[in-house]
Image (cartoon, rainbow, N blue to C red; front, side, top):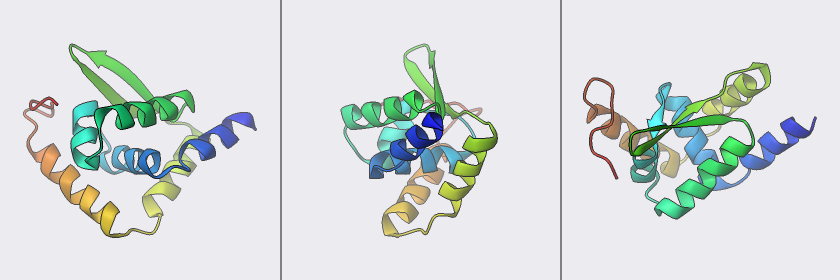
Length: 117
């Protein structure tokens, strides 16, 4: 039960919720710089938020050269949570996130972030 409570606590903060929603929406792993650009928050804020999601076992991180890559950790409980996040009521901020995400993903070459932070 502790893992479930930790997961809900992790997404209870707006920046962490928005970051998780990006990963759910993207359906592919994202590099930290893409998340930073889309959410338009300082690198430190995004790193702390992503760290909390990693600690809650919702997302995984891996280093690829200089970039940190983030992806969803799938499992029965997590997948149910991801569905709820995807269906959460949208607002102007989340709609803007979606547009910036689509734009940022369109800049990829062969599915890989090339812009960096």
